[in-house]
Image (cartoon, rainbow, N blue to C red; front, side, top):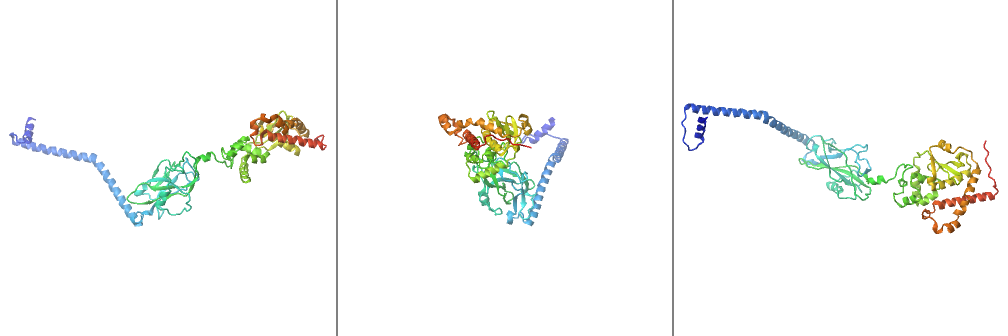
Length: 470
């Protein structure tokens, strides 16, 4: 070891004194250096072969594959003109599915079958999807375009036309995307999932729009034509919450009918007259349509459309309702929308088919009283259940004679003179806010019924005859 150090010191020492060496020592040094060189070479070769070799080999193969594929594509496409620099617009984005309208803000935009919308990069000449090449995995930007005033579906838009139709995020008066939306093509095709239009806090009017798509990056200098969908209507989703129902149901709020806006003047007027549901609307229409039209305050055209809409209601309530005030000992049975089913007297049920014309008229008059006193109405699942509490009995006109006698004392109470002298300033305010309805309307009917009976009695109808049934 000491000899070796002395030898290295003699070699590397510069101007130092040379140490004497023998011929054997020189040969050993040469052999040692040669051996070390061989060992290092073997080590390097082994490292390159085991570690660096596979990495470099994969890299070379990948580069060669890409270059060969690119050369083949260029050769292939240069022959049919797809990416030829002299015909750059021969590629285009194309929306493969029609947008299902109307589109609601906050809800995903889908195709006609409820499936996601697809977009593809296609050859404009052949219509074939470009599944390979630089553009087959491009980044695509999704936009919303204003379609108002654009009636030509087949009009060719320039880039300026396309850009001018884009609805930006800052435009709060129209439907817009809350943020930028992108999708990536895979083998030339992409699927638009969970794409939703937003609205501002203020109410948004409906408008016509289109979906627009364009390549968001450039690749190898190739230009691709933008895509746009057919025009579709966009509605504020809040209008769906407060919109009409087709058909309406009996339990729907009355503003679900046409021409009645929620919290609008007509809606408030109906509410003030206890017409809260579609069921109430149909009930009053069946017993006093003239009064209902006055409350609604609509012209003949709007009145007709509202009534026609209400009549499309599905009558799925088969219950029978009874109004039977104890002070009259006479009541009326009816369905959910005011259709007369029969009369009640002294706790006995008389079906409508057993009532005479006069009896039916009296019973229908009592329906208006029932409407004004909804809290006193009781219901039965069906006619059989009704007859358990009110057993069946044939009609007798004397029943309604008793009814008239029972309400004669109301003539004085509800007479105009009595109202002026007794009620006056003490009348309840809520009875005056009905626009002629409420108890005043009921009083007028009661007075007319009593006076009609008196006229009938004056003509000689002292005793009401019972009908004979075989």
